[in-house]
Image 1 (tube, rainbow over the protein chains, first blue to last red):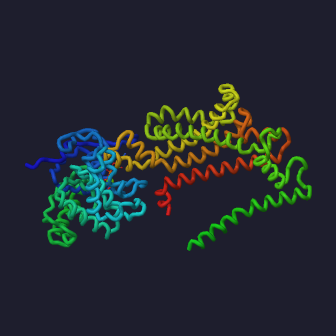
Image 2 (tube, rainbow over the protein chains, first blue to last red; image 1 turned 60 degrees about the vertical axis):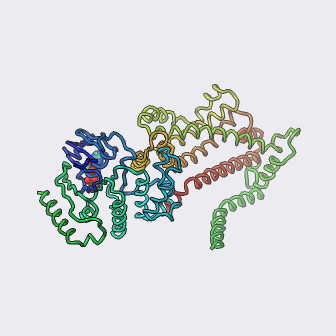
Image 3 (tube, rainbow over the protein chains, first blue to last red; image 1 turned 180 degrees about the vertical axis):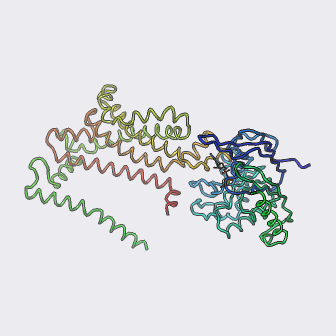
Amino acid sequence: MSSSAIEIAGVTKVYPGDNPVTALENIDLSIADGEFAALLGPSGCGKSTLLNLLAGFETVTSGKLQVYGAPVTAPGPQRAVVFQEAALFPWLNVWENVVFGPKVQGLAPEKYEAKARETLKLVGLENFAKHLPVQLSGGMRQRVGIARVLVMEPTLLLMDEPFGALDAQTRLTMQQLLLDVWEGLKKTVVFVTHDIDEAILLADTIYVMSARPGRIATRIPVEVPRPRNLDTLTDVHFNEMKKRIMHEMRADQH
Amino acid sequence: MSSTLTGQRGKRMALAACLPVLFVLTWEVLGRFDLLIAGLIPMPSAVLRAWWVWIAGAGGLSLNPYSGTWGANLWFSLQRVGEGYLLAIVLGIPLGVFIGWSRLAAQVVDPSIQWLRPIPITAWLPFSIALFGINEFGAIFLITLGAFYPIVVNTTQGARDVDKNLVRAARMMGAGGWALLRRVILPAALPSVFTGLRIGLGIAWTAVIVAEMVAVKSGLGYVLWDAYYVGRMDVVIADMVSIGLMGYISDRLVVFVESRLLTWRRLQSY
Ligand SMILES: Nc1ncnc2c1ncn2[C@@H]1O[C@H](COP(=O)(O)OP(=O)(O)OP(=O)(O)O)[C@@H](O)[C@H]1O
Ligand SMILES: [Mg+2]
């Protein structure tokens, strides 16, 4: 049995307040080391909540949530997050944004500079090191968002609709980029999306979530061979998968 | 292209200058026709003359306090504003960042600031004189107090309104405590901090004039009141203009520093 990267058992998350919201109820989930997992589901089903629990931004109300055998208590560089709106520091240029992590962790520049240069090149931004985030397009900003977490060599990559705010064309480019990067690294990824195509194209396993209260409805292994690229989107395997997932999602609504 | 830019700039300056020029001309003409209240409102030309003597007149042993003493008095006021303002910055910015960041600090400190703030600095004058006597400290106390409030309040607001995802991103990358405050909260709050700095500077100038009128015996504020007592309205007006000029120049200085530090903000608004 492959070791699991993420172990979630009976996790419930209630946002307290005047009207408490049960965002997740009794979730069980196990994600293997090196697995690319997609969380797919309608708006409000608790995808971001689950990701924020894994990141350590929120704490569970009850249940067990472990990443590589340790409970999550606070955010940290081992569990890197890519945000939907990139969340770059607008006062730092691309280079400074990318080396922010290693720098605040107190690493010596010679330890991370080569890696940072290499990563910038990997995401195609080697000529934009001196640009400020406002001078970049949405897609380029998201590349910086990816580069700054890859530099930290995290064990787990958490992505919350990272391409959700991009136009269709840029989105495809970014998906291709992520595929390329991931094929080279094989890191564990949890990728939140509500786009079925995106989930099939990228993931090894799709966890379909249902809303109110948030639950994992089904687990669907994606039987589309790798390496994948944008041509995969028109592949027969792909269309079969898509039909199946749409069927299950519809069945789930009744 | 640059020539059209300077052309535009020249036009803007001409437009901005037309009202003041018209005002001063009317004033002068009224004076020439003896239409100003005699002995009360001097003509602009008389003000300029008095100002010139005040700046460049033979000072030293002469008994005239309005001859050649402009620079010294200006320097006194500038020093006080500088010291008091600096102290307000050194106290206000860190405290504001702290209150904005820590809910506990906000709950403990913020109410007190809100209660003390409605007391105008002028109301602190007697207390300040009683406490410090007629000397520097009273003036600096008032300036610091006056500039402190807007700086701390605006910094607090800026630190409180920092985008939640930026803080999350920083913590995810390993920034905590001090690094978070210095590298994320402070820079993110900086636009708001500068709003406070500019308001605070205006209050610092108000405070220095008030303090010098009452609590010390030098500076532009002291001269202002003193000249009024001896009926030197020409000096009074020259003094007022001097104060306005200093306030304007120091504000431009803050704006310059702001534009240097906040390039990212300027680009953002395009
Ligand atoms: N900080 C919060 N406080 C209170 N309720 C919250 C909070 N964050 C999320 N919720 C609620 O929890 C539920 C799940 O929200 P969540 O953001 O996890 O959904 P999501 O699946 O990510 O949705 P979307 O696709 O729109 O991003 C929603 O009903 C939401 O209103
Ligand atoms: Mg979400």
